[in-house]
Amino acid sequence: MAITVHEPASLTAVLDTIEAFQEGTTTSWYRGCGDTSHTQLPTLYRHPSKKTRDDRQALEVAIRLAFTQRAMPFVGRTFSNDWDQLFFMQHYGIPTRLLDWTENPFVALYFALSSGPRDKKGEPTADASVLLSDPIAWNRAALSLVSFAGGILDETSTQIQSYKPGSDFIDMYSLPVMMHGTHNSPRIVAQRGVFCLFGQEAKSMEKVAEDGAFPDGALQKILIKKENVLPFLVSLYRKGFVESVIYPDIQGLAAEMKRSFGY
Image 1 (cartoon, rainbow, N blue to C red):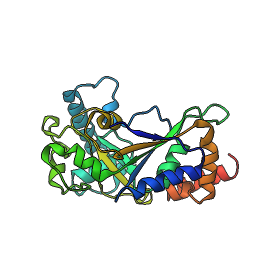
Image 2 (cartoon, rainbow, N blue to C red):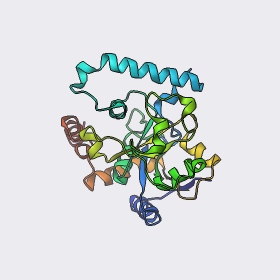
Image 3 (cartoon, one colour):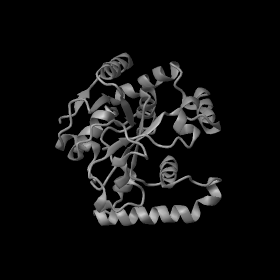
Image 4 (cartoon, helix red, strand yellow):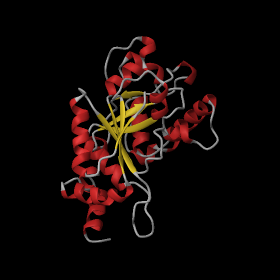
């Protein structure tokens, strides 16, 4: 499947593209990327030297063990199961097989417009993008070998069990799947967080879609030219999508106040 790329020239055109995409799906998910040259691959699979399947499995085991041994004084609670721990680790930036998506297109837009590289004057140096996905169509294509005809997965789904934390990579399905996760932090709730969970295959979502029998619309991209990033971001702020909305805590409020007072 060739990924459709849209290049809207205004924020209104961006929203029109999202609206058109939503009209063609029953469910739509989004992911913002501050530098469109970055492919959609989770952190665990981006290690500079751990490149084989066995390497990645050993790395995941080692990371989970280190977290279990050392994190409890900082966590302040126990985890209900391995999935709960996995989503918590992802939230705090520890390498996992998860890739963050959102049900809210404005959240994805915020991350696309605010997280990209800047020069010394604060000007964007890379084009940004928003990925759009139909998670149901994606899962049905990704799991076509087992004739999957369902929708979005969660930790109780039969098809997700081979991806469970601690599973042998060789027993996992190859392709990444879309799933709901545990909303175990206020930020995940505010950001309407959902996830793409990778299996044994270390291909980016773009490469998976291009190589596989995915239907048109399962994955699309809105490309935002670097010269439009700041104007679009200011427009988004004026519509009320500010730091304290995305990060509903004192850090989010502090970031919003610094920006509004010209820092």
